[in-house]
Amino acid sequence: MAEEASSSSSAAAQEKADMKSAQELADLEKLSAQYEPDVDGPLVGELQSSKILEAEYADADTVYVRKTAALSPKYSNYRTIKGDGNCGWRALAFGYFELLLRTGDAKFIESEYDRIESLNKLLDSVGMSEYLYEDFVDETKRVLKAISKSPTIDNPYDDKLLVEEFNNADASNAIITHLKLLTSAFMKIYPDAYVPFLVEHPTIDEYRSAQIEPYGVQIDHLGVKALIDLLFIPAELSVEISYLDRSDSDEVNVHKFEDESAPATAKKREDQEQRTLRLLYRPGHYDLIYKNGDLAPPSLPTSPTLESVRVSMMLGQEYTTDPFRPSSLIEGIMNPSSNLCGGCYPVMRAYRSHDGTLSTFQKVREENKTEVETDPPLQTKMFRNSHYNTRHYQNDNFQPEMWGPDQIRQPKPRGSQREFWRRFKL
Image 1 (cartoon, rainbow, N blue to C red):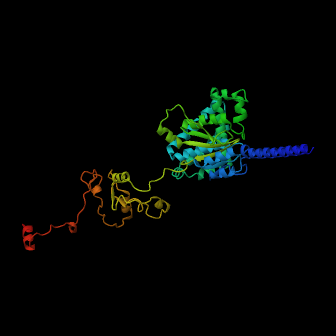
Image 2 (cartoon, one colour):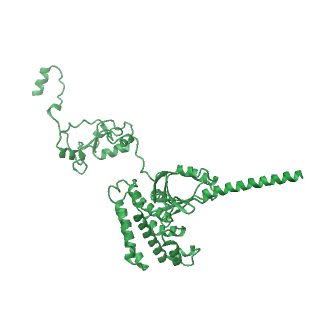
Image 3 (tube, rainbow, N blue to C red):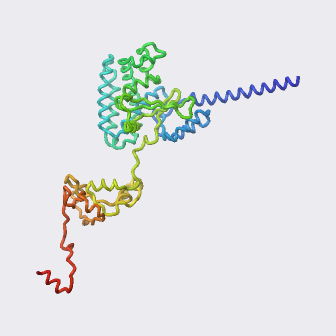
């Protein structure tokens, strides 16, 4: 009897331990797989370090711990999108505008403005009345126009204007509605590309009515594909989605949507990296994530090279110090009040451009009518004998040096001074 009681007690303890382990696992799965996005925060959040994702999943199961730990070395930042049912649409919309802004190309943005305007014909072709969509179209065009103007386009990595626009609920929701209408019309015009992937809806019209057009209905994979086909691919932009799920791997699974019709080259792949929108997908929710290098222009050189010296010579600039003195450019950038070139490149004076027009230095002197010091002597023999020097007779804009009487050197006398002057007068 004692043995039976002991065995029964042991089985009960084991069952209790198993229940505890199962409950702990359930709690971990709830924390990880049933991620609840923030419904109280801003529509589009500010940039944050991807390290925050590691901290968020630090107490999750090992699958998510491994995957979030592998994110930060490759992806420096991420941006939250409000989980109001429109996060996928809003993430794609914001990312589209952000990619356009990061190109720093006003003409490209203007061409997209014209293309968006031309898509009104797509809406007309499916029977939509202009008075139903014109306000939404106008909001999209207004933001496009705003990011194509200076000073915004002059600072393509400054997202302040876009974040402000997309946190304006009226503007942000109008743009989303415009994209929903365009996507719905696009799928109606080209149903064959999407009908084979329908699961719950027998026809494309039913799918559009239930999944694409209603406000607050989350975009699914098929809707993502249609929106990318409509908005991103024609602009030669790509979309990359990183799936943070329970799949068996040590890193997030990445799927890229891009134009596969054009031949792939190394240069094309390099350019496309800078024109790729990256989404982070957690079950039921989309955020934006940024790869290392997405948010900053190429780094500037920290010291001059022979190539930079050659370019400066071609611009008609004259060196007055050693052109190969190493130093740092960053200090001058961080402290604009200091002489930017003084700490990295030699002090230079530009006299005249190759087209014969006045240089910036001369224009300033003409405008201010101020006295300036005499031209400093050249200190580099290489440049003095180069045809890039405007004082060289082979330069197209040859300008001979002006000599004064006090700069003329008389030959040294040989023999007695009386004999020298006698020969000089002869």
